[in-house]
Length: 332
Image (cartoon, rainbow, N blue to C red; front, side, top):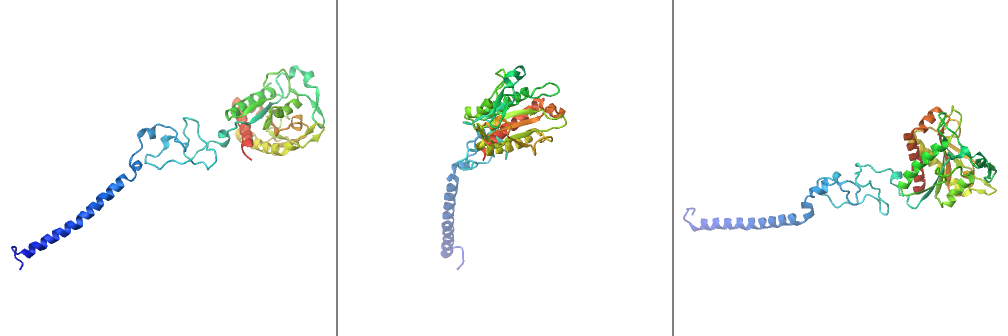
């Protein structure tokens, strides 16, 4: 019967209710345990970084980037971008690197433990010491004057003043990178030194490399710079066989770096593609360490003279020199 007072219908309704409860309770229980498991599985991921970590600007360990550039969303622990075993390049303290940017290799290079000899050509006092500087010295395959006065611009700016200024600027850049820089003269002696003494300076200082800085006195119609490389000289007391190849590599680096830094063209009146090889220079014949000369421009040419008397251009020249020496010492 289907009447409301019959017992079978009540037992059927109770059975259905029991069945529903039996199905729902396990599902709720399973859901509750699942939610708890998710809620406590990664406390670090569920906790946002404190505002100070994003706004402080402090450099994050292993990343080399400012905290101000870190995304606001939680991240996995940072990892170094440098290959294993390499030295990561960073940014100066308090300065954030722009995304994707990195310091120039030369500017970031560490020259600690390296010694560089810079030879500022001539000497401002040579004019007053003709007897001393005209004395002949042995350069292996012949004899040359001890030193010369050098050239100057039409306005009277001397090569000796130019070379001292540029080498002092280059020294500041190189010492900032950790190098020990030795000068053959720093305006602190009345004349000279002679070319054979300048050549010995590299060995005396146990230097890794040497560079002689000059300005040329070519024809007024010619302009541009060039680098002088050593020819192989094995004669008398000269034997530069061991330095010819590394000096050639230095010369190529210097030519390219100086041109990039200054915009100065290769010389159009001497050399070829900015390179000249010579066997008559005592400073190269007698050197025991890799060495080249650079003629930074023609001081007798009005356009070159205008550039070489500009302090800003001289700083660019020093930059090109420092970067070439750095590249020579840190690359192969």
